[in-house]
Image (cartoon, rainbow, N blue to C red; front, side, top):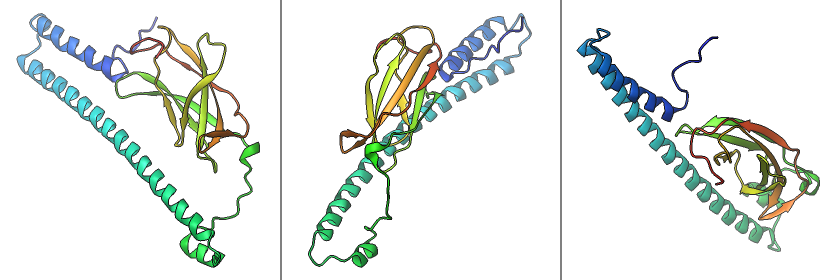
Length: 217
C-alpha cells in the first residue's frame, strides 16, 4: 500500500514536523554522514520558515484588522451620505437632475427583497494557524447583508450563526468532536437588522477532522 506524503499540509503541523526533523537529524548526523554544513543550513532554513510564518500570520491579522476598519469607515460614510441625500430629496425644490449630478438617483431596480432569497456557496479553507474553516459566500443583492443559520454534527435544529454585510463569512468554529463534521447553512436577507424575504436553499459541506482545538465554541 502506498504511503501518504510525510510532510504535513497545515502550516502549524509542518513547522512542528520540521522542528522534530532538525532535532533528530542532529542526533543521527554521524550515523548517516550528514555534514556539519548541512546541519547549519537546515537550522537556518528552519529559522527562516518560522520567521516567515510569523510574518505571514501577523500580516494576515493586520490585513483583517485594516479590512474591518475600512468596512466600518465605509459604512459610516454611506450612512452619512444617505442621510444627506434624504435631506436633499425631501426639499420642496428638489429635482431629479440635481440628484443625477450628485449621483443619488440610482438606476431603476425591480428587485423585490420580500420575495427574494440569497444564493449561498461553501468551501473548506485553511486558516493561517493551520486549522480548517468553512467559507460561506453569499450574494448581497440590494440588501444590507444576510443572517446566516447553521446546523452541524448531530444537531437537529438550524440556529442563528451570524449576520454579515460582506461576503464571505468565515465559520472557523472547531468541530464538536475529533472526527469529520457535516455543516449545513441557510441564510435570509436583512434590511437594517430585520430579516426580509425567503430563506435560501441549504448548502452543506464536510469539515475534515480538526487539526486544532476541539470543542463546542
